[in-house]
Amino acid sequence: MASNTYSQGAQVEHLKFGLGQVLSSSEERIVIKFDDHGEKKCVTTLVMGSLKKSDRAAPVEKKGTRKKKTVVPATA
Image (tube, rainbow, N blue to C red):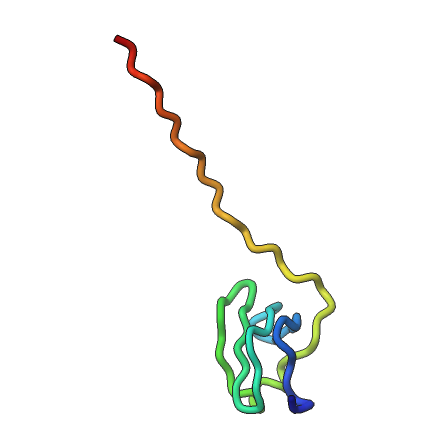
């Protein structure tokens, strides 16, 4: 891997999009999932000046919490 790429899972910070996590990276393209702006695909050489490594912990994915419907038996 080239020295100007980030490894998968690296936490990064972008000047405009804020904090995010690298999903994939190569010499040509980098895909980052930003906390507030979703997934962005960028040309690596163009975005490297705007990225810096972040030492924050990865955000916890929120899971939907749906309650099971309870069936009340009909009384005869």
